Image: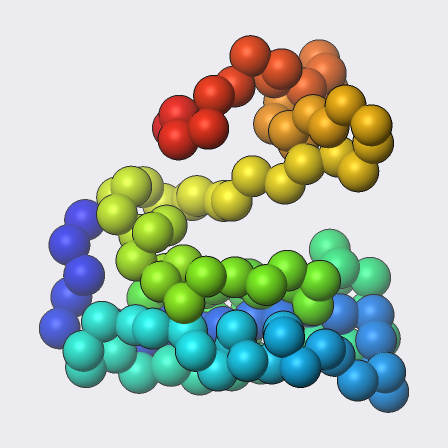
Length: 127
């Protein structure tokens, strides 16, 4: 799946925060996002909804605008500037970053099947 000429990307930001400001670090990271030359980038922030509902709305918006890609960025994630390229290079229909639990011995939020616990043998860089 190659990037087509002049693709459309919707950057969707689901958040429960309606009035609370987001951090400067988050804003700096979002405004530093890089996309391939010629890409049209649209932005949509859905506030005041649970994340699953907000993501469904963002999916509907992406379909309505015939976006080629939908990039979800949560309001508590500081993405690297090249996140789109890093995810797209896997050439698959769905790809995600890895999140870690916030406990003394962190575990990746990667599941070994349907609700069978975390994939604790995962190695950084493994796909």
